[in-house]
Length: 346
Ligand code: NAI
Image (cartoon, rainbow, N blue to C red):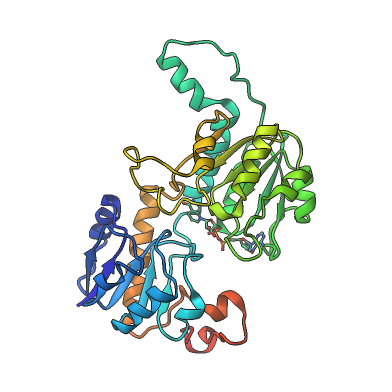
């Protein structure tokens, strides 16, 4: 039996992991996030299961390693919260590379539709028997230019959805998808031409603050920005200024730069100290959801199944298709990845 410490547990995680239970795995559920203060919880465990806002830095990796942990199974696609250099050759990291690109892409379109047609505002008005249309006018998405940054699994589904609406799609990706008819342009051209920009790239050194004062300055007046990828793709204060000046007409954010202590939690009883977030929440043309784009039954089922398969593949000594390491993510010479020859990164 392999005992796995499951951090940042929410009732829905438990429900879906219990549905997909495996006779050789026992999950030990902790509500706390993983960080250096809670890493010790996994002392008698064989592995760790973690999520997007867990802290997997140098200290945590060394505590886990000293306790004998050799695998961290991320139950998500993103991995920007991990110190891969420190984990290299100490702890194998596996993840769920794609569990439902439809879930995230559909949520991105949901944010866009809601903002454009002011559905969030209409909902509250009609509940108050206010049937006025003043201030609720939108525009036809048909014929508008949408710029998609990142054309991987989610970006491509989002492009298909946009085409279904009759929108003109342009995209930027330094690694263009093969055998597709996507119209690729430079990052600058995308910023200049798009009526709507939707972010679907990972958070890396190159993409951090890809939306900043300079890139916002290149954009059309009245541009819409949708971010369902990672909060740090956007420099929040610059976005706030651009919204205030009218440069950005609306923003749909499923992720936020400083989300880690807030999102997924009920903070209604707390004083929120993040002034930028408070300002965003006070604006009628900013729609914030708390990292829920992935949250469909199909996605949760796929996450549980894939995480369990990843863990069993590790303990059975099999190839780890979903492993990632310092070598494969960075291409750095001091982190050579052996996955192609050995089926495992190291
Ligand atoms: P993917 O790996 O299939 O695609 C990412 C694409 O981004 C690739 O085509 C890659 O070439 C491109 N890319 C890399 N560097 C880039 C750059 N500098 N500029 C533009 N594009 C770049 O990943 P997938 O599954 O499509 O997910 C995309 C992102 O969505 C994830 O990295 C994650 O941050 C986010 N995500 C958010 C969720 C949510 O619930 N809000 C759930 C799942 C993923």
